[in-house]
Amino acid sequence: MGRAFVYVILGGGVAAGYAALEFTKKGVSHGELCIISEETVAPYERPALSKGFLLPEAPARLPAFHTCVGANEERLTPKWYKEHGIELILGTRVKSADVRRKTLLTAAGETISYKFLIIATGARALKLEEFGVSGSDAENVCYLRDLADATRLVDVMQTSTGGNAVVIGGGYIGMEVAASLVINKINVSMVFPEPHCMGRLFTPKIASYYEDFYKSKGVNFVKGTVLSSFVFNPDGKVTGVNLKDGSNLPADLVVVGIGIRPNTSLFEGQLTLEKGGIKVNSRLQTSNTSVYAVGDVASFPVKIFGESRRLEHVDAARKSARHAVTAIMEPDTTPEFDYLPFFYSRVFSFSWQFYGDNVGETVYFGDFSGPSFGAYWVHKGHLIGSFLEGGSKEEYEAIAKVTRLKPAIDDLSELERQGLGFVVAL
Ligand code: FAD
Ligand code: NAD
Ligand code: ISD
Image (cartoon, rainbow, N blue to C red; front, side, top):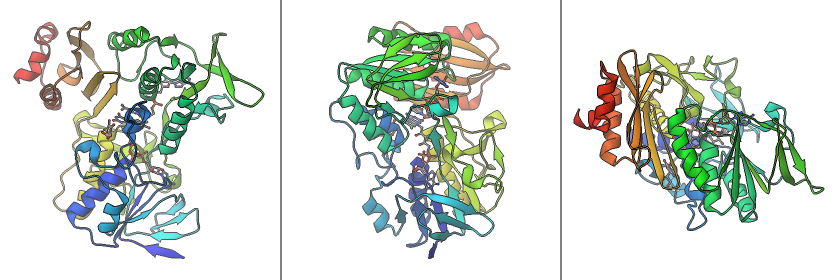
């Protein structure tokens, strides 16, 4: 059995939703496009899962956060897909792909053929087993990648009020979930190997601002070590964790956020890979001209850095998806994808944005004991990265605009003196 489509989006996450919206804007006909997703729900804004979804009061629930509400665009409910003649093939895992024949084979045994394929398979959470620790399938050990994970986390959280949680990992998931656990009145210990949180982005000074606040909320940071094993009760529930430094922590709940691995396996040996992702050109086109890759799974040329990167952030997923659709539908007029990396987070009442790259010398500005502060990164005489906590919409727009311009910086102390005034004035 089989079906044929002109356009197939493989994966039903953030990028898929934004690609679908773009296809309708470009005039796709009924019956030409399908989305195949292992998830059982239509594409949604994944960032909500570690924020609004975990709130104790009035938590975000579908259908409220289907794409594309995160970019203040239309909310694409299952009804919307139906009205637009887009087939949503949900709860369906693709188990193999043949890019030469232009076919995908689902786990249910259906062959789906395409003229153009957009790979939007995203990534999966790394498991502790990959680091030699077993037992992460216990009922109170949670990962957080999709709606099913988030639903399970909420269930475990609700039975752990007043108890102890151990958060493994000090990155995005670790920081956002730890804040949510505190808001849910759960005592939190965070365990990670680096000397400070958000090691991939924050400097020690920026990290200590947030860590100090978390500590004031009772969070216990255990740094420079990792988990070595779990302690179980006779029912197979985790009651504690043993750490490599010899210490141990009690646990009613464990949340693991130790990074991701892009879902490339269907295409290994068929498409060129790079930096752990599927290599694409500035049209988001892979080494096979009928196949495009977008979002977390794609390694694409970031023009302002002059090199390819794989970015694990929602803005890149949204914009790369839209660009790929434009490149497919308007091949002769689509410019190169020229993307300015943008990361953000919201925890407690904090909200920060970062644009560009965090290499070179750091120049801080603002009041690190107050609600708003920031940093610039200056590399080879140019401002190439900007971070701002507690900014206004206009200020965030200003740091983005100036970072894209990569202005020459002759005098770091003058930049420090001007602080946010530097970008606001330009
Ligand atoms: P995904 O959204 O992961 O979608 C991939 C889809 O492909 C899934 O539906 C999956 O089931 C499907 N799939 C994979 N393999 C198959 C297969 N073989 N067959 C069928 N379907 C398949 N980024 C930010 O910038 N800001 C944030 O605040 C933020 N918060 C986040 C919070 C959480 C909890 C998580 C997990 C991520 C967060 N991110 C955030 C990252 C952001 O969500 C991702 O960058 C984004 O979702 C990537 O979109 P994508 O479409 O490439 O992949
Ligand atoms: P991450 O890469 O942000 O952080 C991983 C953390 O785990 C790091 O602190 C790392 O040192 C630590 N770690 C690695 N191995 C470990 C081990 N064996 N034991 C203990 N700690 C270990 O990844 P994440 O936090 O898992 O997030 C997953 C994905 O979700 C990422 O792609 C991230 O970008 C995305 N996400 C983004 C946001 C956002 O942009 N606001 C929010 C949530 C999730
Ligand atoms: O970008 C985002 C984000 O951080 C969310 O929480 O999209 C979601 C939506 O705003 C949720 O409605």
